[in-house]
Amino acid sequence: MRMTHFTRAVLWAQLALRRTNTDVLVAGVLITSAAALWFGLLPGLTARIADEARAVKRARLAPPPAPVLSPQALAAERLAAFYAALGDAGHTEQVVMRLFDAASDTGVTLDKTEYKPARDAAGRFETYTIVLPVKGDYARLRRFCEKVLLTVPYAALEDMRFKRNSANDQMVEASLRFTVFLRPASAGTTLAAASEARR
Image 1 (spheres, rainbow, N blue to C red):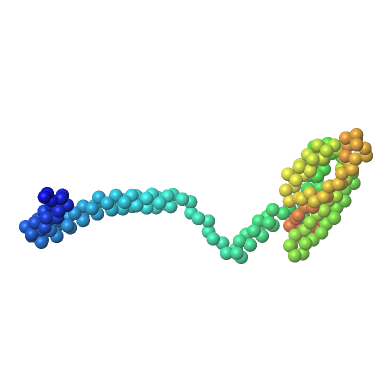
Image 2 (cartoon, helix red, strand yellow; image 1 turned 30 degrees about the vertical axis):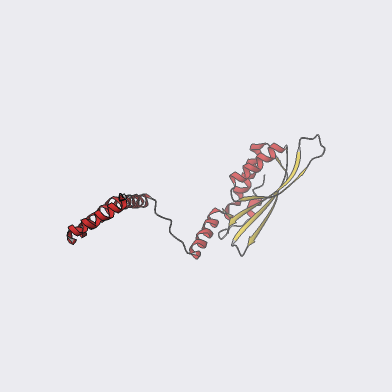
C-alpha cells in the first residue's frame, strides 16, 4: 500500500528536524519571518510615509487660518463696520442733491419733498426719512429707485405707493419713502440744513 503525499511530507519534516541542529532551525524561522515582514509590511509603511509627507507639504502651502476672535472682539468689529457704512449726518444736503440728480438723469418729475430727521439713541445713529411724490412711467421710476440706492448706499427704500389715473395712462404717480442711516452729526451741524437744499 502506498503512502499518501501528506504522510510522506510529515515523515520528511520529522527526519529533517532530527538531522538538523536546533540553532539552524531557529535561524531559518527568523530569516523567513524577516523576509515576510520586508515584503509584506515595508511597502505599506513606505506608502504611509509618502502620504504623510504630502500632507505636511500641503499644510505648509495652505494659507494660515484666520485668527479666532472672541465674541466681544467680533461684536466690536461688526459694530465698527456698521458705523463705517453709515453716511455722515453733517452732509445730508449731498443726499438731497443726489436724489434730485437721479430724478434729472432718469426723467422723473419730483414734486414737493418731505424730510423728517430722527435719532436712534440705543443704536447711536440718526435717520433721515425722505418722502418723495414722483411722476413718470414704471421703467423710469424703477431706474430712479435703482440710481438712488446705488449712489446713496446707506439709504433704504422703505415704502412705495403707486397711483394711476386710468388704465391706459402710462404716467404713474408714486409716493416713495427713503430712509437714510447716518452717523451722528458733529457739533454745530443739524439735519435741518438739508431741507434748505431743496430745488
